[in-house]
Amino acid sequence: MIVAERKPVSEIRDLIAPHDRVLFLGCGTCVTVCMAGGAREVSLMAAVVRMAAELGGRTGLVIEEATVERQCEILFLDPIAEQAAGYDAICSFGCGAGVQHVAARLPQTPVHPGLDTQFLGVLEGDGVWAERCAGCGSCRLAEFSGLCPIARCAKRLLNGPCGGSQVGRCEIDPALPCAWQLIYERARAVGALDRLQGVAEVQEWGKALDGGPRRVVRGDQSIADLRR
Ligand code: SF4
Ligand code: SF4
Image (tube, rainbow, N blue to C red; front, side, top):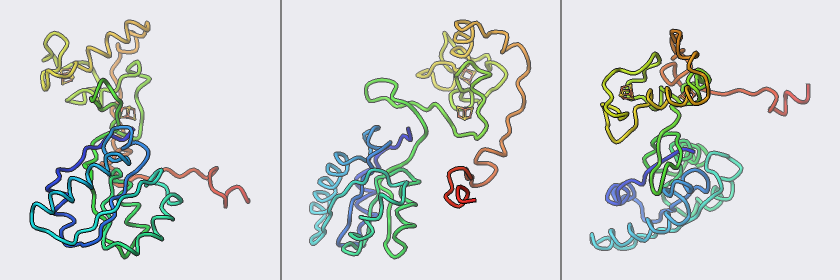
């Protein structure tokens, strides 16, 4: 899932300060699962921002709430487009992609982000989400027994550990396991240590964000393509 965090209340209050009627718009998918931008979080944030505005002496601010299934799909935004005329601005609690999709659907309406989008990750434990994929565009998991050194090694090393780990913890952040310790242990457990013997090829970073904005084009999913 895409993992995000709520922005501080004071930041959201300041973002919406120029507006009198604001729609707080949640997203029902990834950011609901990571408890940052679903219906419940939007409702809580709306209440807290209303209170913060009142305590700051602001009157006349109206914040209403709605949540769509997915802000990253235009079909789910159509009902909001009809509603949007009634608001001066929208504060989107989707990920960064969702915020931009809402803005594209509503070209005349200011759209502000309510979240700080973090990474692609998993729920690792109670209230703990951890990064697992950096979206490099050229997946190497098969070489590393299913553990990603790009997302999980602090130095993104592809050819073994840096040598700085202590009792299996990363030297950059001892709160995290050394990714290469995990890779070695898993490779041993699944009988794939031989895959770690050679020199790993250089990563094709041109497929990562460093190569500019990316798109995935699937001709087989296009109606125009099916009609041919
Ligand atoms: S190798 Fe790339 S695509 Fe695969 S998990 Fe790591 S960052 Fe993600
Ligand atoms: S200690 Fe392990 S995870 Fe941390 S930077 Fe070195 S090799 Fe990477």
